[in-house]
Image (cartoon, rainbow, N blue to C red):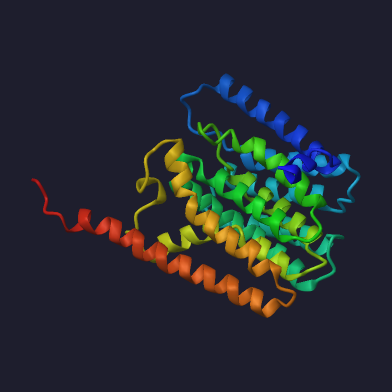
Length: 308
């Protein structure tokens, strides 16, 4: 409890929290204006990124090209959405801004981290968009992302930037749980991953495996679309639980477990090899369990005789 109360004594946490609460109020105001029965508003990812970057600016953290690079990512993906281009074009549209953010970042001088940012932002944003097409009814995109953010805070040795991100993301999660008013959104998925990886790179320089562990905390946001593509017949997460706030909690347990593995085990190593072994093992187990359990859930329905 004392550690929790100590967070409120840090300017990083309180600044991020103020902006997160402001974003929460803005989100509910927009929801009230647009109507409570409309689909979830695709704004959570943008709110998290804006609140995080704003908080880092207010605490005088050097941002380098983060702001224009994230804006370039959002604009590129927005153009894809407005022109109704094929979904995979989102990846190409996000590449210039992602390369700008990764290779222009002043928070790391590790080449592999720069490459990771340039590659994972477009790919991760695309996979998260695909995830939300099946799971936004329970707000799982936002919830899973917040769990990944908590994982980054637990993983990196220097937590200042992670404190801002965590404090900003936690209030915004209340827009997706217990009532689902928002999703990460198309543009928001990409910029949220960008801000997330920038923070991981900033805080993990003292122990590089923690950056890999932080990135791996995205977990099922990346894996579930792969599982679905490998076995299209697998049952979706939202079809395995009750369609309410408690169902969202139950559906979040696998993501929580994977985040713990990546942030509290893999990220704690001083050498990269054992960290990667733990991450790969965790991902392979999650992939196998997801395919097996999802397929088993759908088997009775597929084998049942037709009533007609």
